[in-house]
Image (cartoon, rainbow, N blue to C red):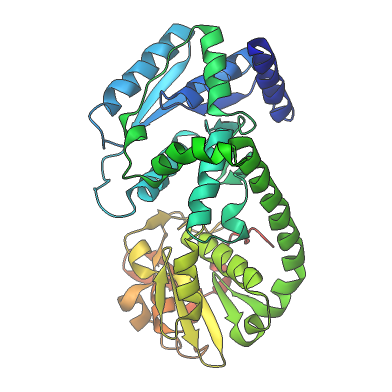
Amino acid sequence: MTEQIRSKILADLIECFEDVATDATIGVAVSGGSDSVAMLLALREALPKATLRVATVDHGLRPEAGDEARWVGALCSGLGIEHDILPITNLLLGSNLQARARAARYDALSEWGLGFEVVCLGHSQTDVAETFLIRLARGSGVDGLAKMQARWHNRGLNWARPLLNFSRNDLRCYLRIQGQSWCEDPSNDDRSYTRVQMRQIQPQLDELGLNTARLAKTAARMSSVQKALAFSLKTIRQAVIQIDFGDIVFDRGALAQLPSEYVEQMVAESLSWIGGQAYKPRNSALLRAISAKTTFSLHGCVLIPQPGNLLRISREYVAVAKVKSLCPALWDGRYFAPNHNKTYEIRALGTYGLSLCPDWRFDKIPRIALESSPSVWQNDQLISAPQAGFGQKDVLQVVPTPWE
């Protein structure tokens, strides 16, 4: 049985990366835990001609994390693989820590992995099952219950989770075949984390037939439903959405005629695109935002009710107030000036910039949306503010939405 597991893991990896050049450079995120260590060894065995580069993210939250990162470094040194430690220094203890740590981890890996063919993450079937249970307990909809993606593109990178068909026990079995140890994270026994609670009740769920494989299969079914929704939304969006430069404007009257799952899906994907987030907001917060009668902040965005029963989603000013990019570089992940003077700078328009735009009221765009909108400057001279009606509108271009 152990050799069968090994053969199946290697076969899955070869199939997963059949569209990747055999000599590609592949990034591998390795924490030192069994799942990511198994992924590293299996990739090395399945793709012998590829160049593997390894990164370990140190969130700075546990004293053991530095030792674990150095352990991974020693493992990579023995394998002849280049290893980088990516420190995160600005995480503070407090609410929603795991979500903030995850976002910071993706930020660090995104910057590190630029230029690689793909960056791999060591999630397993066990993670799929645990995530399904966590989101089920939160009352998530189809989008939240859907299985983790095995391959996707985000932040200018290709990402992969190549081991989603294998449980943690399978991967540890593979490591034992290799005679390879791994690090045990003590937080895996900390019951203050919901994921640990779900992990510890899994034996009882197994007795009821809700084992890891069954839960993962249900998550896969939810992914199929998710795809069906996405297919339907291609037509529905045309009736309820208007893209206003980088803002998205919904017809709330038209939204009210749709099943709630469609509404939640469209608003969530809009928030993720505008806010530059890899993950969609929690369903409970999303529902409050959709029904709010006044301006609501969520996911780095503001949802602004407007006359005519409209709902505008714009970038939140505080999220971009200090973000600056020299032309033609991308600003805030969505705007660029491809044919403009490299001494020019893209930044949020702000209160001062808006005061330089005499016609900003003409299109009746809310002030809060205009202040966070992109503008082009040369030192203190405003060159263009497209949404506020100042200068040439075509100076700035917008990256298309994922659904266009």
